[in-house]
Length: 101
Image (tube, rainbow, N blue to C red; front, top):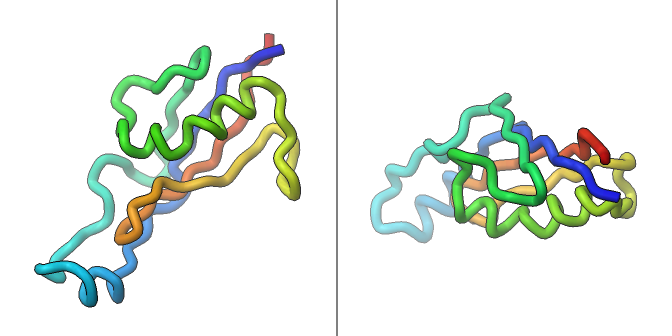
């Protein structure tokens, strides 16, 4: 059993305190690659066109798990909330299993 996975950008964050403490210039902004509410479809566990390759490397394991029918502990069936690993400005994604075949 497999499915496609819809990826929705649900929140862009900025850890300004970490930016100020650990970067050379405290002038960082939220991630510019995504906008909140933006949606992508991963077909056959492939990275969607226009998706950030760094974020994909971080979330791909969850996309694969959902596409293959995994039930993640403590989360509604067919759903996962995850984020990229940019410690200064992480983007939070909702993954949803869709189009099950």
